[in-house]
Image 1 (cartoon, rainbow, N blue to C red):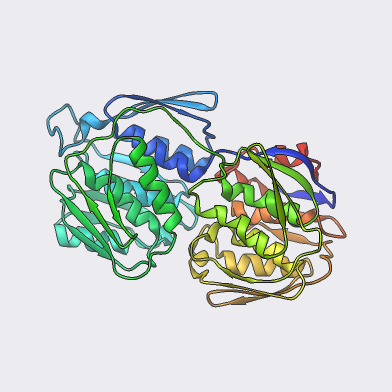
Image 2 (cartoon, rainbow, N blue to C red):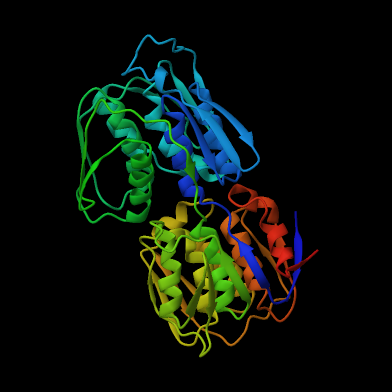
Length: 431
């Protein structure tokens, strides 16, 4: 789907969709429980569908009713707890689509169940490294058979408790996958982080959701995690809060002189992408709170700043757009992991914003931006089939002098299926 977007101011109230990060975690905890759970305020984006289908493959029963899921957990099938409780030894097929979270969360979880698990996917998912898990499997004698150049991985064997050690710059998804799994094993485990941990916010989300489902982990300064074995997830009802990753697009739109109330945000959220608020404040935006919503205004204009992407990589494309229209220089650092997302987001962000008239330079681990007065538009730009690039370009269109055409715009379904409908409802002009 190609969309031509006219320059037009956005105004009104937009209710951000539920947090994808929290939804993944809640679905997994519920599906590993020993009872029936209700998960409210959930949007079945492509990534969340991948996780629900993955957990169904292990015996969870998941039914949708509007924006709620009722989940009957598969805890009774966990081999370490009740090895002979009717579990099947048939191969579990896990289609991760393009969801890195599904893949890295579920690979260790799969070792809780009898039988082999085969992981498949598409897009750039086959390029996402899994070496952390492969090293553990080698050490513990777990069978794994990857296919080079694509995601087609077969894992067979049961994870054992032990001491696991990683540097802090590995994806937090590996650590989260182990945190989900290790408490269900028969013995205690320890995870040691050998260097300062990046993406701390995502680990905090994991621990918070696990705690809501009755599983506790001792966290010593995000450098050591002590995990008691023999625990189980308890049936719990859970509401997913609004997503700061998606709110970032609309909060940045406010910074760029749109006029939006961005609603359904938790002001004390543990989401790492809540950092968008402090980043925009550092650039000159003042926020007003209205109930559970925020309105941002840059009354005295925007100015460049130094942005550390280590804890909030997903918001960098739209923050970079904002920096392109800020006075002076902005440097974005510690953003190297953006190169192995759905696309190389550093390259995509720099390339497409440059087409629109931005002064933006790609660095090995970040971006260097010198603010300009305006973006010209009048160009065809590519989403790279990446949802966050497509949505960033939609916000860019509101401040261009001429229309732009975004190609492969349907990719927003990965995280925000109703994005274009919401965009039109607040004044976006698309064809």
